[in-house]
Image (cartoon, rainbow over all chains, first blue to last red; front, side, top):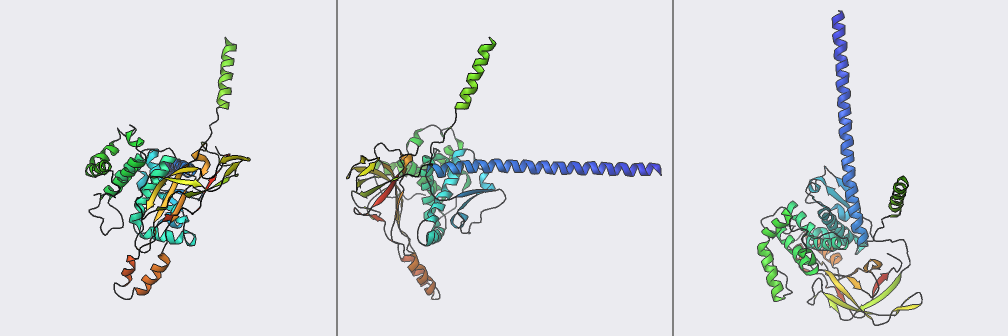
Length: 239
Length: 168
């Protein structure tokens, strides 16, 4: 009898210890996750504020990091309706340096700025941006390059970020988005004409992702070279 | 020897306390001067213009800073075409964004100068017609062919650039 009581009390004590240890582990995990989220959010806010202040954007824009949410391809952008930049966890995973994060934020900021202008407090413009997403994809990329340069970030970061995160589709004839290779070529051309010093600097020379872009964009870059040689002002049909 | 170390440490601490980092901008001051400009030539998306192209503006009225003439009338100010958005279907208007105004003795950080000029937006006309025609097969899609207006800045248009002389 005495032995049974001893065994039961031992088991209860063991269970109690195990449960409290589990609770402690969970608490520690939650705390680590919160700290991690806080670090990411602070980094995003800091770079976002740099972009807004350096470009003297007099519109309110907020940034929110959401690890679990995924961007649905057919939604009207949160950027246009809530004037909020949401950074999705699956995209944040691919960010290497501040230039890439700045590129990602700058794109969204340019869309938000557009949603403030125009008729009915920007509502009509926001609808049009949502509907002609193909055209505005390119405009947002170009504005992002300007914002990045004004805030002191290297615009080649936008190229490496898109190169890593956006898949290449077969065709964009009846699609809502441009081919990624076309977008990248347009950004490269924009930097070539407006900010050539960034292409001459060696900051991205040893970047694997930039070198991969250079490799995959050979035919488009040949077309650009030809345009520059002939001093043409016509738009190039990139592949 | 101890005195020297103590003095050295004091010097280090005083340096650290004085080495305050400043942001490259300070938007505290609200005083601004309006600089009114007009383009020397018409700028239009229907012409052959390109992103990064330099364009010239003329100062419409002399600008004074603390009673001193700061920018005389008819001074030429150069700027840059930043982005061009071409007109599109469904009444989507063209747009020109001009910035980077170069004014003598003025830092870019002291100017709020982004000039956005948009063409006629026919969205309010196109969408109601499209919805009305939707019951007739394919008729609604015909409104896709209505193009938006070109963006144009004429020589008598006035563009206002705000100069904040007390910003960093």
